[in-house]
Image 1 (spheres, rainbow, N blue to C red):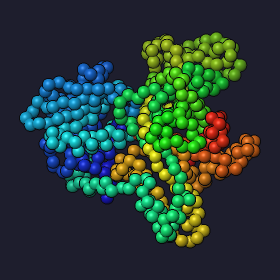
Image 2: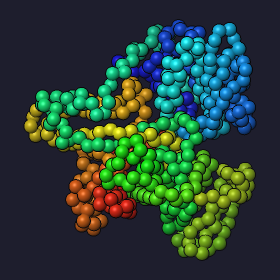
Image 3: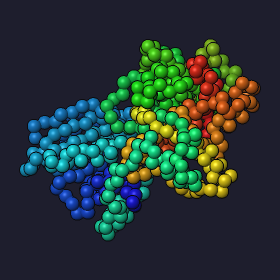
Length: 516
């Protein structure tokens, strides 16, 4: 089936759901999604991104944005609830149009980045609402925040070029196949066996391992403390955030609620049945800090804002330029400094936003805790929904095909890619939510087995008890290109390996982060 096209705004990328593939671009950042070419009046989805003058009030501005988007006001008022998208505050509202006919509407209004407004809408006849609402949810969960800006010229080019193609006829088929078997269906064993050149599917069982799929959900209700998620800032006990020698905080990667894993997937040895695992990554060497918070410990939210990211960038530059022997005390503040710094008696640094409102990223003069490395941090966040799944030892399967000369590597990789759909059901590839992984098998991008690479690093670091690859397990595999717009540059994906015995003993200081 041909894949639907990706559409860009300045801030995010969206892919039309399979049932709404005809995209009408009314402006470079204003779109209407219809079921088919030329259709109008029964159901439509809407996407809008634009600058706003002044401060956006999600509750007060919802009705005005809805009237602009749908072309008619809502009668009888709105039912609303608080939501979030990429960790940003949002409101979702439901209502009925005042126009003729039983038309219902939904609107999600988001406080976007850089003082912008993001709006996503649904308009449908009452009898069409259920399938349209399903497509609307698919649209919101498939959004991906951009990690780099898009020029106005590129958006205009998209607007002009895609509209010409649309007028020439739809490029994508609208058929939807819901027949993807679940991850534990024997259909996958039979398909893998065929790729290995075997007829008996039982040969696949030794290559499979139970695993946890962590499916990103960027849209939904505000998350309680300690919820499994990626991006943003961590939930930690006071004083638990890892820091460098200067007191700068290491960037947060993700956190995983192990009780949520156990509830969704059952007990999984050697993982603890509860507690919060938090991961932090920093430096060119991809240094890793792992923090385990036992259950029952009070957590504190540490929200990450764009102002804090910008201020951290300035703070890092100042810390890098600071001579090691700088005496304690505040450093001179010059016009144009975004932050001020004071050297403490223990050598750590204390930062504040510039006292000059013209230069301050945050509240002028207010102190803040700077990050040690702003490259791996992102304001955008997505909930991680755990689901029980299986993974195949792809390297072992490849070696079997290469050594025996029987089977097909292409068929093996196609089966592996297709099996990812079994976790979330059918989606075209471009709308498949990003899925990370706990436990099971995962090969590194360079063809190495993560267990072998971890054992080699352990030997280099003098950990003789960890020199056997079988001593290691895949703890978490973090895939780049997530809905949070996170990139790891030439590291590609990130794989966190842990000693099996350490995890069983609740020890986390020897976990390793491997690129690829």
